[in-house]
Length: 102
Length: 504
Image (cartoon, rainbow over all chains, first blue to last red; front, top):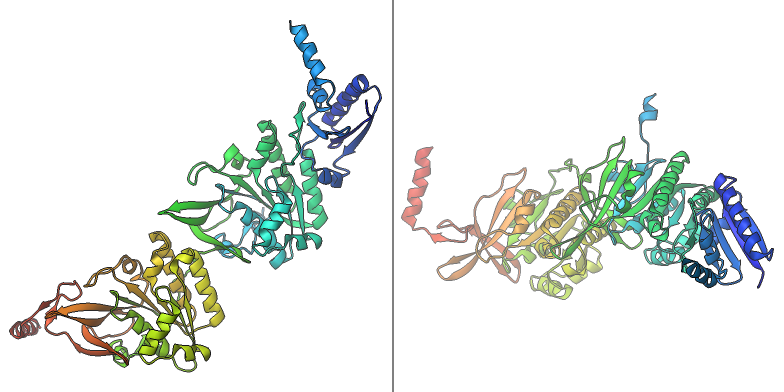
């Protein structure tokens, strides 16, 4: 598994930003085995970066590497959607789900 | 609170005609909603609002696009004569690109806000020190994100932040029907202070663009729909009918009609600053009258002829037939002849070309042959607006205008054109055919001549190689103008004469 490069864009130090950071860190610890680099960008401090990346909503998580590039918006409280966006074993996940429902 | 605080200041937009109908421009430092159906020129208005700020007032602008990419906007507007790229490089224009990106739609996990967009907008405003901002269009962002309630709440937040920054904002929104709800997604609820509506209505197979200021909270504006058109370099040009004030100057300076006898009939010639309508069936001599009118101008005058019925070659040949050399007059720059098919463009565009040509050539005499040909390309309402626009424009310029109108029937009759414009013209001359013992004769009468005595006779006239010759009045015929001439016997005439003298 290649190393993950993740960028998380937030607006200031709001509860929502903190929640997104915490949710993301928990998922990464659990699923990525420390094989990741996380950059947190505050758009209030770096609006130029948000412009270049054309970020609309905050929080926005961008999976820069490995390709394909993907965006996930929201406070990342829906873990399944995050895993789907990170291309983390979505099919196994679905299979497991299906088995458990049987 | 003092009066100055209550008073809503306005920011002149620089869009032709708009500052007039809005009585000064957009409410300054406030947000105005610009709503319209697809193809109603919302983006043009939004772009031009910024462009005129840069071109005329040295005010920078920020353009937030939710729909088209900045590349597309730059390309599309370059053909209208707006070099946005140049303004961008000069630091007068900044884009906030929120257009849909060609990557997959983002996954949505939990709640979010549009904090990044707001930060980018504020950043762009600071970067170019913007006084104007256009956001195009609100509906498009609803299509990019799935949670409509979040988008609505966040747009409200952006609108309220814009109120606190000192910028004048224009937000566009789409609507489904020309006469219905103000906008989709009920966006007017949060920028409801000021609403402008653009329309692009199909009427009798013709497109008619109009603009209406629905409301400006706390400040005055003109009411109703105003026609507008879009032309290269100028963009949107609004034709403000209400700009026409009834304080046209009137002078008692007379100019020659080009026919000595007609001058006598009019009490000494046409008035300058007046409009004369010549009405007649085909072949009665309208174009001849125009030709003589143009040719009779003295050396210090300049004449402009707009011909919508005949080609240049035909006109010049006909003039030559009456002994008038248009070619030489044009070389001497004493006249200018412009021939166009009415169908080449809409009436609004015709009006603008005519005004521009008049402004450039500065004529003392203007002739339009014929107004009724222009009526073909317009609706009745549009035509009436055109005539009001052109007559008032000419009267403000120390000119005399001669318009012709073709009546549909050979004998007698009036046309729709005339009922529309007769009250707007100062003088009306009727040219009519009259059937006398199996022969078609032509007759002429001055029906109306504002501010002057005139000959009330119906006079016969003939046309030969030297032009028009007005002869004696038809004394023994009645019913010419109604198209049913009846020949009176001499004793009948005598009896009628006595009848009136007895009464006196």
